[in-house]
Length: 150
Image 1 (spheres, rainbow, N blue to C red):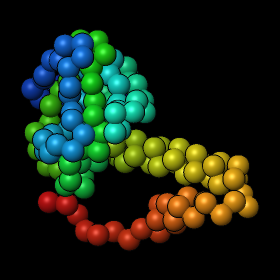
Image 2 (cartoon, rainbow, N blue to C red):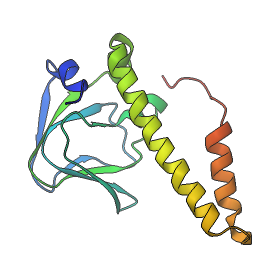
Image 3 (tube, rainbow, N blue to C red):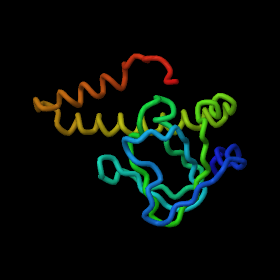
Image 4 (cartoon, rainbow, N blue to C red):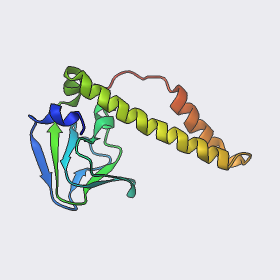
């Protein structure tokens, strides 16, 4: 079970019916949500990119950390319950174990993306239209930090 569940047990919860939008891509809620129960899908530009059922999965972490809008839509596939963290930066600062969990989650996603892009690069090696893949890989590996979002 996710260690996040222990840290969010005292936070308010929010329920969503099947089909309900939990987070809308492009909106700014300023919240970090942690799945307590249910099944959700993650959509990017209306394309399903993942499904989540495991309690303790976090949503809204990129928006909270980068200070921008949500990068994906999260929709409940079954009735779902989330713990809501309204001040995510403060929460992550005061709970280093939760911060480490979020960092590991983001590192796993980045690692999977890198592996995927390298696989695409290998498959199309020698083709001229891979400039974009090279640029994305370069940016992922060497992107300078622009400062913390506040």
